[in-house]
Structure formats: structure tokens, C-alpha cells
Image 1 (cartoon, helix red, strand yellow):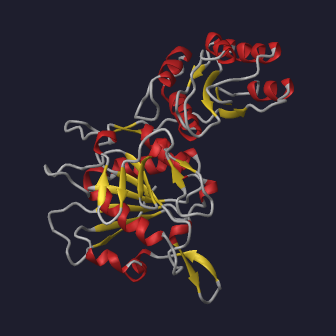
Image 2 (cartoon, rainbow, N blue to C red):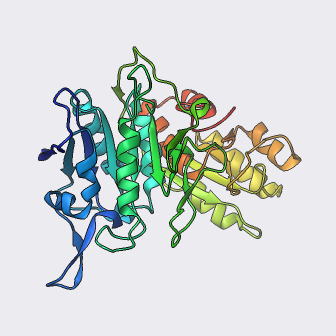
Image 3 (cartoon, rainbow, N blue to C red):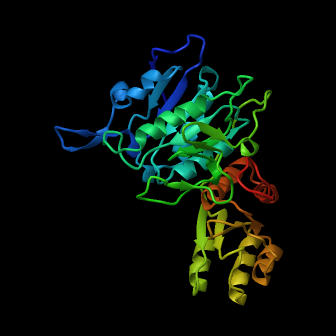
Length: 357
């Protein structure tokens, strides 16, 4: 799909520097009030210097690419994740780094999906957004946008990127993209990472948590792995769940994988019928990936008898993987191979820092 790219040189842009590519997908950040219509509409990138005058002080060039039609975050799809990955891959050599402006509701899903598809990534891909539109006086959009740009272009003393992975920057913290979850719908601190430390904290200065940042790999080459299988579903366990509900999910036509959201450290009811339904599904070569309903902690299959049964049946432990990373990882795995055994092996191991072992 062709896109127009608009280049904006700041007064301090160095001719030798590669610019940052800002990709606008949609979302609250890029909205302004249309005084004639009295409603929020997407802003045009030529307005960015008026809306975010701080951009004039940056020392690097910025290029803008916008989807033809802004996408509401709730309408994000695997096809759009693939489109984003292809855009980054196609323009990888021409840009220093990438900032994606995205709606907050599904930002963690997009960040997770991109982390799997952009194999060998050695540049920053930073997703950010806002809880209030950029055209509103109290908006958090300006700080999120400016700091995301600064982090995306940050270099170490050897002029190598400090960040070379997919991240989310929001409300002064930088998080690994496939470790983040949206936790707040009305506060500015919308995203948290309960099972992995923050990668950076932006205060008076930006403090990087270097031991937890994926290190730059000098000889790494980007490989686009954008095949995804969306024949997946969530099954969230709750007290009183019926056999009919479990069976209806596990037996859906064409289904290839289920993320099982379990209690605590990976526990489920030990009813004979429940275990029979899980066992029968795995016998039909349905991938089942066990993640906890808790935001913090991890699945430890075998710690309690109820999770020991799952392990023995062949359910794959998701350890401390988020639900967002788990479902996108399953889509990714299904797109890489049709071999059930290989799919299970890929699920078990960390692919890009999304889970601990």
C-alpha cells in the first residue's frame, strides 16, 4: 500500500543524520477540535509545529507517515499489525528509528505483535499515545510525543542506539512493549509492567535501566516474519464455569490455539469433565497456553495439583507472559509452522523477552 511521507527539518537538524519516521495510525493523541464542526478530527501533520512547538528545538529531522484513514484503537487488526511491520521493514535503512502514534486501548497488543514480527530489530520502535487529544490544553500528548522522539533517537557513548527493541512510552516511563498492559482508562499513568522492570524513567533527565534493556547487536539484520494465524481465542476460567461453555470454546470450527486464563499460579478446576475436555482438545492438536489472570506473578504448572494436571495433559505454561503477549505470540507461532510439536516448542521458550523461564 503506497503512503506519502512528509519530511520536517527542524532548525537544528544535522544534514548527516537519518530522520525519525513517525507513523500515525489514529487514536486520541492526534485529535484536535474542528471549530466549525464542533467535534474532534484528526490533525494534519503540517500543523505539528503549531501544536507541538517544542519540536523546533530537536536536533534531528522528523518524517511523518499517516494511514489513509485513522484507525480507532478498538478496530486494530492483525492485518494492520502486518502493515505496520511491512512499513518499518520497507523503510528500515532510511530512518534512524520509528515512533508509532497509536490509540491506547490496543497499544499493548500492537507492541507485542510487532516485537515478534520484527526479528533481529536493532533500532528503536516506540509506541506512544495520549489519554487526552493534542488539541486540548491539559493534554498529555505533547510530553509523550516529545519524549518518545528523544528516547527513540538516544545514543550511547559509542553512538549506538540505547533502545533497540519495541517499547511503549507513556507518562514518563518506558516499558518493554510485550511486557506492558493498559491498566487505567482515565488516569495518565495508563500502562504498567508488573513482571518486568521499567526500561527508562523520564524526569529532569532520562534515566535508562540498562541491565534490563535488550542490548544492541552490531551484526543483527532485520527479518520480517509477518505471517500470523488468527484462529485463536481466550478462555477465561471463573468459578462455576460450565462444561457447555468450555466445550463450545474448545470445539469451535477452525480453532488452532487457546490462551487459557487461569487462577493464581496457573490453577483450574479439577472436575473430571473439565480435565477431560482439555485432554480431548489437546488430542485434537489444539494448542493451549496457560497464563495467569493476575497482573503480577507467574504460572507455575505443578506447584499445585490442579495445575499439575494441566502440565501432564500437555498444556504449555505461559510463565509470566501477559495475556496480550500470549495471544499475539500464539498468532505468530501459528504463522511460522503447521507442525503441532514445533508450535508447542516455540510457545514454551522466550522469543523476544516476552516471558521468563
